[in-house]
Length: 548
Image (tube, rainbow, N blue to C red):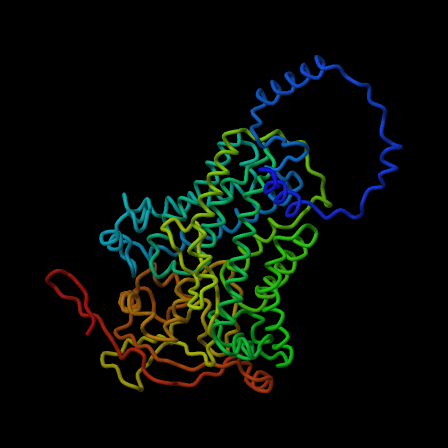
């Protein structure tokens, strides 16, 4: 019959310790064992009493040692935790910097989707956020730049200088701030990596600092996140577009992905047999390798490293914000770095900390029911949160692949009467394709939110229904904050356009011959009008603007 400690011992030894290389030689052990002098009963009782007092005085609760197994912590993972925490802080820094530099045009009081209007109709229980209590652009900027400051402090290792409880509170700050931003971010913050950052950031609060060894249960929960990210993405592909099963999706994906990178043109032109190898390798990495995360070391480390290599390949092939980088970060927590550096002597874990970790683990396991049920469902949905705090979520990407690329091109003219032969000047975005001769840039892990949503607008106008009209209005006004989101405006700051129009084009990568002949990496073909010529009339009474 299994003892009540079997589960903890299994988790500790099977998941966080390497397999034994060979069975010890019993005769050799007997020969090398020193002689032990027998002790009487009184001596033994005295030693037990002294040891018990030392444990109580040190504050090491039930996790200090059980028999010969310290099951609550995994000291060998101290370097894994250090690398994970510093890398996570870097992702936090990018996320807050993105918010600080873009929010005014997207979410500000005069933004395309203003936060005050959103919180007026959505209750706190559905979208918990500090901005439900108070909002102003200045306050949002304060929260964003404060998040940058805290993330930079964590990146510098300030949490290691603090007591355990203070370090946990410091890690809680960026999570609360970013949760507040995401929950009022609306369409602009509807991406799966927002929830992924929040889920991982929440677990990081309870990972501890230099004052204690990493808790086994939190390390296990981080692997559970990584498993759902990869396995969920693999399942959504198999259940989705048939091209994933035919191994042909990458014949199109590098060209039609949301925001190509500087190497995407070359990835697209790889031989088609190699594309099939890429897809097959992707299936193996996302459907087989995640299971190996729950095997003993060094197999689990090898599985995590294989995932990291796959994510780095994706980093080279396109701009996916910090999706690839946050996946790499959580995979680092599963790598055993103990062969690189031996763990230092760490103090025992306090009882209150063990209780908190156990409670959080129980909470996450309960909340995992619906995401797990979704994972095995034939009606699997991806990138969905089942609770307003984004504690346990579903993930997935590219369940369907576009065969052609459609882009919305926005143009303006200063002419009094818009005609087909008017002087229409094109607005240039930073990341999305525009000028066929302009080579794609590398922006990830920085997230160009407007550029990404323009890709969705090219797929269907329904994706742009809430924000495209406000965008056009602000371009007609030469709104400074909106123009900062663009690479270039064709109109001087004091001379806004009189009319704006939008046209839909089909884009494709040029061939090698076309590239040599024209120097252009894109070829585009006009499809249809997306938005007819539109202008603003300023109404004297009320001073409001409307489209005609």
